[in-house]
Image (cartoon, rainbow, N blue to C red; front, side):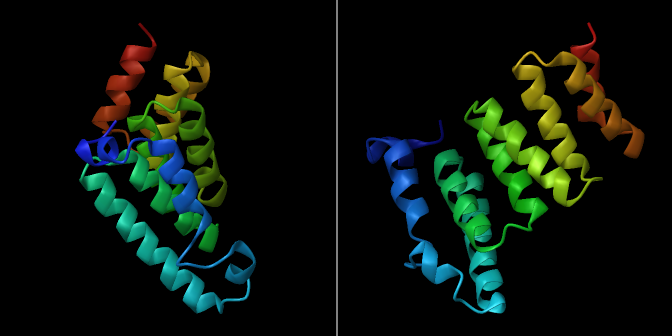
Length: 156
């Protein structure tokens, strides 16, 4: 897990569950009533908080903020990709793969999402699919060092 912040509260899962349920203090039914501009504004704020938590190595808190951001705006490939990386840090391989795939459904050429999905798939033993993702990254960005390293490690 992350730093000491997650330890002090006693349980990350309970914290994530409780913090996911209230987006800006709103019940899920109220989110739909917000004007689109306000939803996008709140989503951006949650993404920023998620990025700050990620920088502080508080992966579970980052995941909670990204989840709230996605409740407000399901169309952000970047937030799905960011949450995918936070899931990778937590070794939540299936969730990481799922979020990276969601990012790719929104933006099919998103190399960060392809790389993250490949990493998650490799960790789950889905080597052929991982290799396919790493090759797709290299097709788009031939000099991508991380994708080259993962591809090399996946084909040994």
